[in-house]
Image (tube, rainbow, N blue to C red; front, side):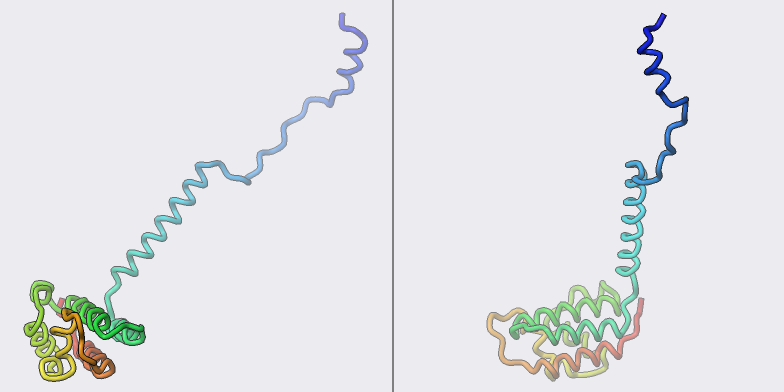
Length: 159
């Protein structure tokens, strides 16, 4: 037989009841991992689709224009402009044709593909040797950017 105090204590207990419902927050660790994986996948897809997007003339002109706004010394400006023009030429023409070009051959290619002589006989001449010299003579950045932008506007993608 149970002592009388135990009966009194048992009588004070609530009757049988169900536990409280499990809340939805915070989610289990597996849901956090799933959410993070989905966000990562969406981010990678967005980045890749932007990276693989075709380069438009407007994008190319914007690239060259912003290059002209940066504060470079003349040697760094010529080097950056030469890299940008090579990148654009690789976009618009066959890589096997454009990639090995430098010096006079590079200027000749730019003249032929842009239907001009501004690279061989004009301000574009600085693109041939300027990036490779320790000291660069003063260049007309505005004229150089102008002929580069004109070259871009004459290009049609061949690939």
